[in-house]
Amino acid sequence: RLENLTGSPTLLVRIDENGGLLSATVSKSSGSTILDLASVDIIRRASPFNEFPAPMASEYDTVAFEYKFLFTEQLVQRD
Image (cartoon, rainbow, N blue to C red):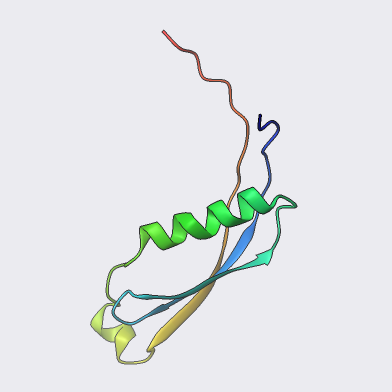
């Protein structure tokens, strides 16, 4: 049984001008391998992304950014 899966991994994400995912790597671990892998999987499943707007594409062929996830335990009321 999995319990207390909370944490905040940070990913370094790189995308190309066509919205393709070049890489998604954990730059700061949450301390949980399960959450770290889940965050990479979420980014992979979300790709491809939108193409860069023309003005941006004329200056950049790739963009890199960090994205911080926050996995928390929340109580959900069920009817």
